[in-house]
Image (cartoon, rainbow, N blue to C red; front, side, top):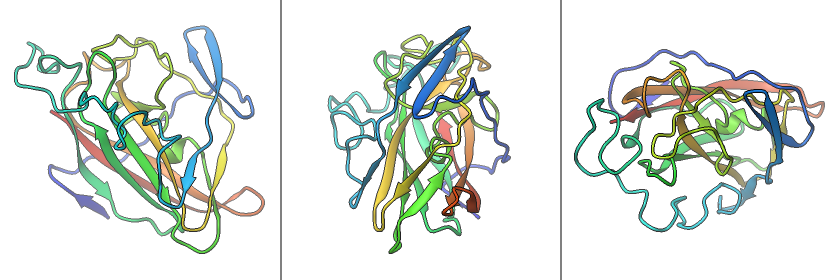
Length: 243
């Protein structure tokens, strides 16, 4: 079931980015023929879902603390995708799937509605464990929608603070980004939450900067057993509107 906020329903396909080979414990991205690997911080897993490793430096809501996450002002460029003074339209959530039949509950929120010359729009995903036992989940990036592409292949969600090949004030990738293929997992303690921020980019397939329209993102959440094999899985997703 999908909890609808507004607008029509969309299709539910999932697109994956190609891997470039596993490097245990490292996050690697490829730009053209070059591969770069950087260490990823540990998950933010605490009882109150507090900040730290969710990519939100500054304001408690994931903004930069300077008011730069406000919605854009009036006025559009000729192509209808670049409101004056920003790198893209405002982002709103228009549909969120119902809770899944798993011991973790996913959620998503918009923490930075519009792009500027300094940063793209930002969402934050949360996985909460309300049970009395720790839960191990995977795949560790996909469950937080890192590197997940929308159903139409025009938008992607990426971890913050990497030097992606995208023009500031536009946030359209100049080329595809690849990820390693290893299956990552992490544990969420009893009564705790894991939160991460993800930034919104247009893919190289998009026509222009952050194209307006409605887009659905979907991923697979898996709860793992002692042998690191999925015991239960469910698809979960949400739709955003750029306007």
